[in-house]
Length: 180
Image 1 (cartoon, rainbow, N blue to C red):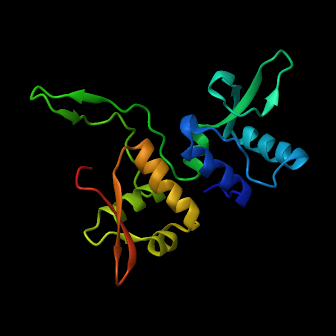
Image 2 (spheres, one colour; image 1 turned 90 degrees about the horizontal axis):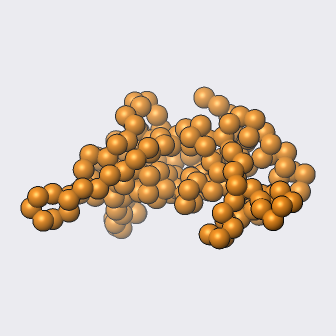
């Protein structure tokens, strides 16, 4: 498994939670030559990609190209995979003949066994659910990365409904909702 720096992990995890996997803005305190060096290394590894920024949508600029346009940074599929997030290819919703809307089997790539994401999903499917300290202990992730995986990778990317409830004995317990 690839060893990431804390800065690389933060950039990739934050980007995985943003619309269209935008890697910007970079973490506070990362600017100038240090930002350029970190981003250059991540581009070399194929974890980030520089793309034309859509200024009409207000996408943040990484650099200006001089012609009134600029570029932004996005997390690539390789970048998602290196932090344990399986990229989602397509999610399709179809209407059933009964008039109600039903979620079809989404066109997701098969979940690889043995990944941290697969481990997280299996823990969330347990009847007793899982607590944040249990997720952190099992995956080795920091709590903010685990929360990002719950809301970004599982909720937004895979369309799984992650619910939480306060348990007097265990604290906050997370589960995959009944509809998932």
